[in-house]
Image 1 (spheres, rainbow, N blue to C red):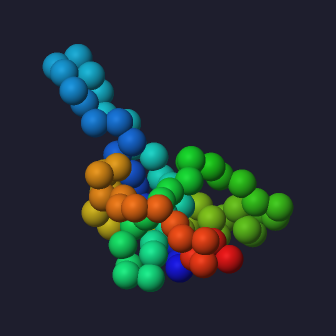
Image 2: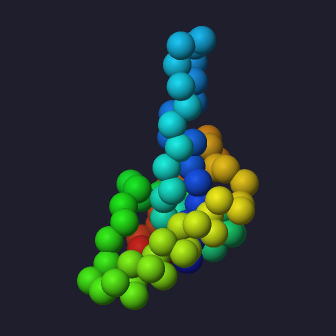
Length: 82
């Protein structure tokens, strides 16, 4: 299992007045390279250098296609979490 930062459309508009909402999240992939989960959007680190590296990875997420909640299949298996 691995993860990377990706843009996730966490709210798709369902009407004329409704707005989309995007988050940069940690996206987790299963052994088949399928997105299977994501974290809430956060920016944190215990050092400024770590925070800078984290933000650089997040900026890289803007280069990849946007994921939708429907792109996440299944759930993690116990083996993938350990």
